[in-house]
Structures are given as C-alpha cells and as structure tokens.
Image (cartoon, rainbow, N blue to C red):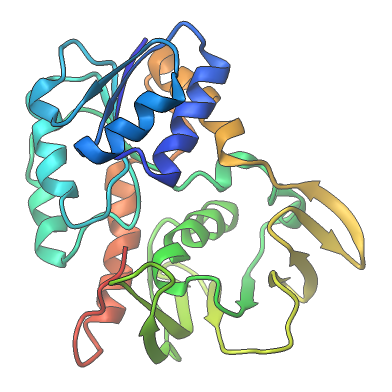
Length: 290
C-alpha cells in the first residue's frame, strides 16, 4: 500500500498517525513545503519519503490524499490524476468557487472520495433507529460554513434524502473572522429540504456566551446533545465519538481492498457543496472559507 499525503498540517498528520497505526507496512510519501519537511524529519517517522512538490512523487501510488486548504486543491488534484493513482481522497471544503466545482466534474478522474467521515463513525446511528422527518442542529461557533457538509452528509444519509435543496427560511446573519487567519466563518440558520418529501433538516450557528461547548440535536422532537466526545440523551451516554485518526486506517484499507468506503463520493459531495454555494451567492460577496 503506497499512500501520498499532500499537506501535512494538523489534518494531514491525523492521516499519517492513523494509517501508520493500522498499516505499519504502508509506504507513506509526504508532500509539503521545505519548512514543514524540516519539522517532519525531526519526528523520525518510519517508512516515509518526503517531497517538496508533487512532481517529485514516484509512481505508483494507490491513494493520494490532498489535505491542503481549498485554494490550490483543484490544481493539486489535477497533478495527482496525471500520475494515474488508483484512488484519491480530498479534504473539505472542496474548492474556492463554483467554477472550480464545475471544472472538477469535467475532468477524467479515478474514484475519488471526500473526507466527510462522521457518518461512517456510526456514532450518530443511535439517533436514527427510525427514519426521521425533521432534524435541527443548534450550537454556537461550531463552523457553519466549513463544517456544514459533514452534517449534511450525516443527515441526508440517515434520513434517506437523495435530492436536497436549500429550504425556505435560510438566513445568514453574520460573516466574521475565522479562527484560521485569513479565513471567515458564518452565523445563521440554514434549512435543507428533501425535494421528494416533506423532510427537512436545519443547521443553526448563533452567538452565545453561556452555552456549554457542544451541539443540541433535535430529531423529530427527541433531544440529544453532542459534546464532540459523546452523544447523550437525558444525561445518558448513547455512543462515543471516535477520533478521526482511529477511523482513517480502516477507511483507506477498505478503499484499497474494495474500491469503496463510507466516505461520500466526489460527485455526492459536490452536490452538497453546491447547496452551500447557492447560499453564499445570496450574500454581498462570497466569504473566504476553507
């Protein structure tokens, strides 16, 4: 198994840790800036090669992982495809504008997945023992712009919504600086409706100074609380939320062995991202999100 990870920041390192733990015999190639590569050399990670550009990567590669910010991602994706890998995993938020989504769909590409991994964790199965018709997620400062696609994937799959659209009542109340320098985040209430039924789900991020860290999730009137570690109902823990690094080893193994996995396909993920683009187009300008 030969895996090349492009962009070895916080998320990229979670890939490294998870894959190395699950597949100690895997050959890892890490691509980043010279400054970052000097830091990686000090870690003395076994069985890796370090490259400062995609052009230095030696074929063949089973899986490319593109874990950069969204600005260079389409260009890097094209470079990966030119090296004829078996598969590619892209990070969200996928691309920097609608034109890049459309260009991506026109490319001749290998099976590609997007790292919206929360559904595959099965942590949220406990809330959906029966098919839900209405879901509302509410919290403060949880990253409506950059993290909405995670929840869209979780709720669409659990609610069996294949054709979603932006629903009535969708509002964006504020655009503010993100925790990541140079980027922005949004507050508001985003409504998504099933085009084939009356099912809806809402994603709400509103300012609050007193709320405990975490998210309230109302599923057909049943209230749950997600503190990013556990899912609880009436203070009873129903499930544990795993670390991404504990999931990714199984994900890449399944991709290599079966050609599929619990991550959404690029095509399904783009449909979800484009719904967000529909919302962003209603603003005075498109915020810089990643």
